[in-house]
Image (cartoon, rainbow, N blue to C red):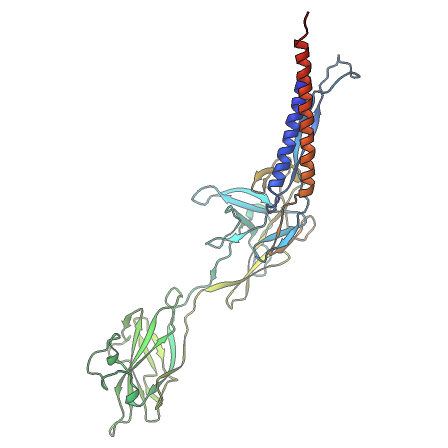
Length: 423
């Protein structure tokens, strides 16, 4: 009996050392909750035993209790690092297969989140942070945990718009000596972008393609007529190259030419159309002078999808995103959960917990309301392990282990003495 009693003491001390070592190992784990081993004595009796002389049979592990006290909150500067100051847990959800089927909902105090390649707010394990869908004013559309969805923050927003109008204001030289390498007026050979003798000047122009991304576009000006005694007009022909390919005029019967009078003002061809979709090049602000070629301004009406430029987390847990000049847009509201008995939660590893019948169902709420803490963006709650206390516990557990080992040694010695008794 004494041998088994001492053995139970050894096993209990070993469990205490293991729990303490686990706490020490996770002193730097974000959101980790420390644990302690609770013991109970083993005592068996029968109706016929004398309670005055009954002796216990050792010790047993009653439970490993989690400590849900607040850990230290440290600032990180990353908005998607979120700390809970007070009660509550984040709700996170993983995926169970390659098809993205929804997995088990778990709960954690670790708020180290980031955005994946598709804009989902996830932790280091790839579990998605759950939130409620919201209206434009940031108010949640539901307060049911079953209707919470993974928070997603798209990297872009809005539809891209391809350029359909290019406004190009240039100053073209009136002096033929300023025509670059153009061989003659008009050139004696067909236009060739690779041959500078077939055009006078060129310039890059801004344009967006159908997907809202910039495309390589260039405008080439060819001097087709200089003023003389009979005709004082100056004529330039415009050739348009997009992604290395010449774009033909929308109406091939109309040459893409712009005509200037003797004062340098446009009299014809202020707007030239190219391509099947009628891309308009507006030259209305262009002139000719005795100065070298220059570009006064160049713009277009295309637009790219708005890019994510800023994130904000308000006191209610709503995440707001800013896309270019679109202003703030609510992306969702973070769900906080609490439990009637957090000690009943099942430890899942990775600083996460699962619901059990002992914990009771999750109670959802808004940060800052009764029973729920505040959210602090750009910060993390560290482990609540007190390292000094754990080291003291480790020494104590080691002492208990040594004492139980000594009790076992004594029991062995007694049994050896009995075995050595000679009749």
